[in-house]
Length: 284
Image (cartoon, rainbow, N blue to C red; front, side, top):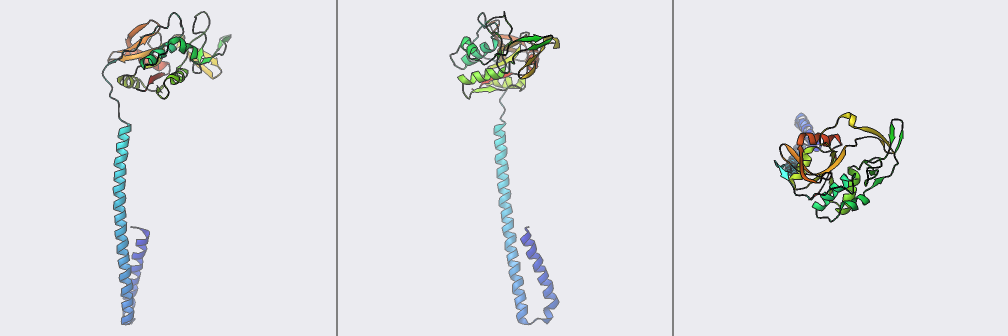
């Protein structure tokens, strides 16, 4: 009931009470006028009540329709990809050696891009990937060097000098050059997202370590970089995940050249999380 309707009903009540109190003093003409006004107000009030009720019914119907549409939209957006019990994809295997002893990241990227039909090799990607050219220096126990989040660190072609590798951001940016709009960097997600991507036939580029299990704290060092302090390990490694089952995760290892190499899935997941849950794939 609207405010206008309430006011009209109040006015009708007042007029009715006034009419009762003075009806004996009124002439027939005035009684007729009072009754006419009373009936008019009563009619208008009835019309307002009908209109309001109709509007409320229409609104309720629209609200219900909108809610149903919204729920359908949410259901569509939240449609869950079916995670298969096991997956094993056939992705090309590329060995980083002997040309790129520190080039596991670009070699794993070459495997991912070639799987997507892109004709590119590891050496081209090694040239094109962003570099952080901050020089290596040491002052006591303090190490000053570049940040793998900003670009490749050190010498990719030899182990004679200092170096490390590169993390997901520069790799994703380079991949985007070859497949614009089709690269998915889901770093920070949980391992279930890797399974979803594999279930969609998308191999996944990741950062892990060469032991494929969680490392002890003494395996990490602190570097002072232009972007701030960072914890690094010289055991850092990159592979292309090609599958999984209940017990194992399968991957192409550029260091050994082994296709669909396997490691215990729980150990591998811990090593991946320890390295920042870095993961990139293609949007098929």
